[in-house]
Length: 270
Image (cartoon, rainbow, N blue to C red; front, side):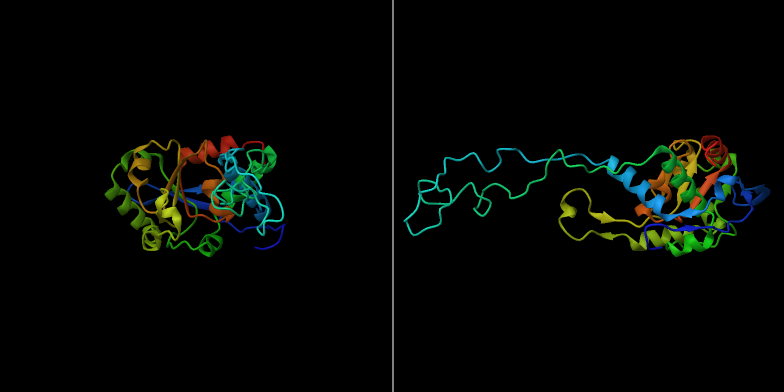
């Protein structure tokens, strides 16, 4: 998927089935047109950077950091470097001295946000959504599953009836998706480096994405603590959920009410 531009026509299934709260196959559903867009990796990556950098907080150094000192150079003809020094002879102020100023400190005015047009952002989101319907692309991202077709569509009753983690685990097992949660659990590890001391102790692989009509539904509360699982509302699901790291093809479960909201949300974009 290298290069600056890549457009591939995916081959998603034209129809799928709606599964109930017990994981049983129900009526056949024709997939809407939002799942039949070409894969645009360039747009997806750009939109991901735009969304990701929008959440970064600008930071900068104090303008007087390392400069609050009375150090002055002793002048020439003393057989020593002409750097600013304290009366004791210890070097100060310069970046090569202990406690001195930084050479090139971070600046608040640095541009760290990637900009993207609204239409491009919507097309990137739809392209990433279409990628969730291609089993080959989802497997290439590392997901492990035995589902018949993607994305997995759940009935509206599943949002309210599946309210316990044990029920959600049984449902995912019957749908052939629980193996991916186990993969995320096995892959969870302790982070290397100093981030362990800064609230980022563990690195956890991404697993299933649940798109619900409302993330506060009982199903969302039942699965939100599973390893690697994310829960998002259909009105606010973004490229950060659909293509983590800018890589499309996430294993996704969508409920029927959420699918209707997605169709209404992107009406007129295609």
